[in-house]
Length: 114
Length: 109
Image 1 (tube, rainbow over the protein chains, first blue to last red):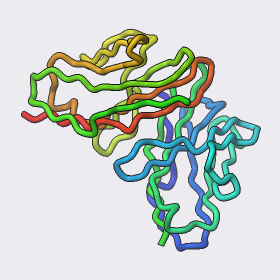
Image 2: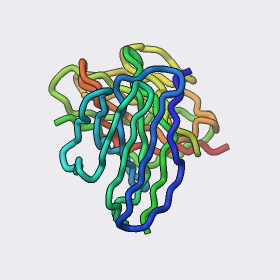
Image 3: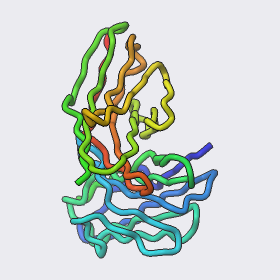
Image 4: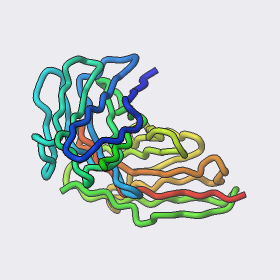
C-alpha cells in the first residue's frame, strides 16, 4: 500500500507554454503533499507544501505565481509550471504524507523546456 | 537554520566490506532523522528513521546528539545495496523534510 503516482513521467514543452503535473495518492488519503525539484546529481529541494483545501506554502525563493499548486482533494495535487522557460527544466518529485506515517514519494516527472 | 550534510558524494566498497555513510546535521531543536534510499530507476523510499531504532536490510543508524550525527552502517555490504542514499531531517511536530545532498554507494563484487 501507500503508492503515489505522478503524471506525466516525462514532458517536453515549448518555452512560454504552461505544463501541469499531477500527483495522486492511490490507496490512501493525503492531507498534505509536497513538491520537490531535483537538479542533476543534486539533492531534493522542497518547493512547496500543499494542504488539501488551503493555499500552498512556498519555500523561500520559489515563485508562487510561476509554480501554481492546487490540492483540491485528499488524493490529488497538481503543479502547474506557467510560462515555462529552459531554466525550469528539471526533475519534479511529489510526495504525500499519510497522517501519522512517513512521506511516500512519487516516481518523478522529467520536464524539458525547449 | 536546519541543515543536513553528507560529506561523501560517492562511497565505493567491495562486497562483504563494512559500510558507513556519514550524515551530520545542524539544528537547535529536537529533530527527527531519516535515511532514504533510491535504487536505480526507482523512486525514493524510506529506509529507516531514528525513532523506530530498527534494522532494515541490515542497516542501522544511531542518532548521536552530542556529535549531531546520524551515520548509516551495515557490517557486510551486498551488491544490491548499491543505490543513492539521502539523509533527511524533520523538525519534530512539523512535516517538512530537509535532505542532504546524498551519497552514492557502489558495492562491487
